[in-house]
Image (tube, rainbow, N blue to C red; front, side, top):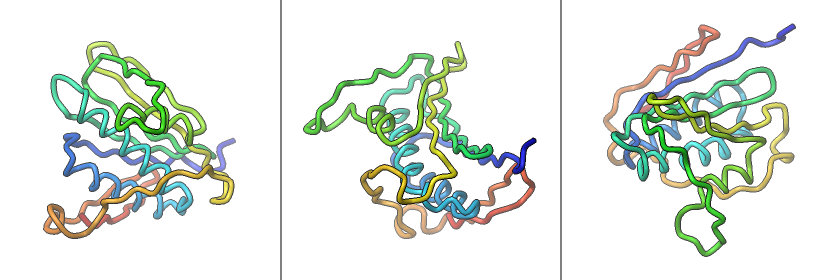
Length: 172
């Protein structure tokens, strides 16, 4: 028996540097609304890494969809892009300036993977345990850059619909 229905949030966007901070704020607000505050930093870090990969590598375009789903005691964050090429996981050391995104996700997530979708592209995902406390989560670097000033200061308010039927307002 399922004691809590699943909760789901979807954001469609162009994976441009100016949009990544906005998506981090949307995901953070949604997790706060679901009372999953300890998962905000790792989820924001993971989605930043995945969207950066789409921005740097996806062809023919940068369109993608971010899905966040809470099902029972597991949060799954996934990014679907239209490039069928699968990502490469590099064995990057601490002095590398790029190529560490998926290794970083592997280090702090419960699990992660890639699902090919043929000509429709691929989905890269990771999971976080939603039943843990903040002290049980691994250490990870803070995510910087989400502000209410700059290019998003004049954007309209976004409303996220969850599958449970509740609405959560997010300031753009």
